[in-house]
Each structure stands twice: as structure tokens, then as C-alpha cells.
Length: 115
Image 1 (cartoon, rainbow, N blue to C red):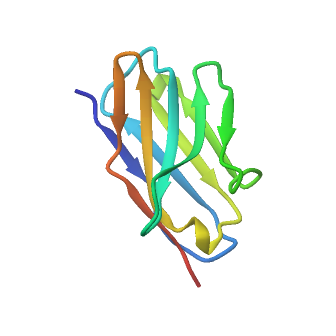
Image 2 (image 1 turned 90 degrees about the vertical axis):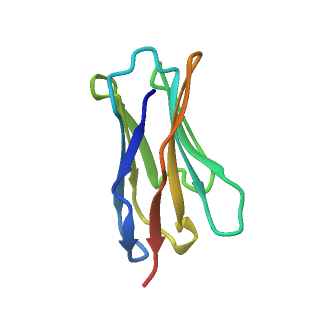
């Protein structure tokens, strides 16, 4: 069973940047999509960004132009570069790897945007 390990969360001031990483515990072939979700206190989990096997991407409207998702297939790793962070970006961020035989989630990493 594959595990996803996230890193890169923390406390950052408004306007700052963070880079999240999510690595699988073993090499995975045929991942259809890798995605980042987030869940703020008292709110439902929402999709932040997704990258598919053909490298097409989609983003939540609230992060377009500020966040960039990328992947390294050789390392079975997905990244989320977050720039111009706002207090409303504060949440626990989760990664997800999905294919026909896989639907794996990370444990979550906390991002806090505050002065």
C-alpha cells in the first residue's frame, strides 16, 4: 500500500511564498492525476489544483495566477508553489494521487498565513 508524505507547510506572512511537496513511498506508474486539496477550519475540503497525466492543469479560481502545480513522474512527487499568499489561504493542505487502481491521500500539512 502506497503512502503519501507531504512537507513544506508552515507559518508565512501575507504576500509570502511556500512550496509544498508530496512524495509517494514507492515509485508509482500510471498515475492519472495528482492534486492538492485544502480544508480550512469549519469549511469543506476543496480542490486547489490538479495536474493530469498529459500535464494539463486546472486551478480553483481563488488561486489562479498565484499557485502553480507541477509533478516529477520519476520521483512520483507533486509540488505546489504558492506565491502571494493571503490569510484566506490558511488551511490544511492534502495531496491526492488517483488512477484506476489508486486513490491515495496524504496526512495533510498545515499552512498558516498571518502577520
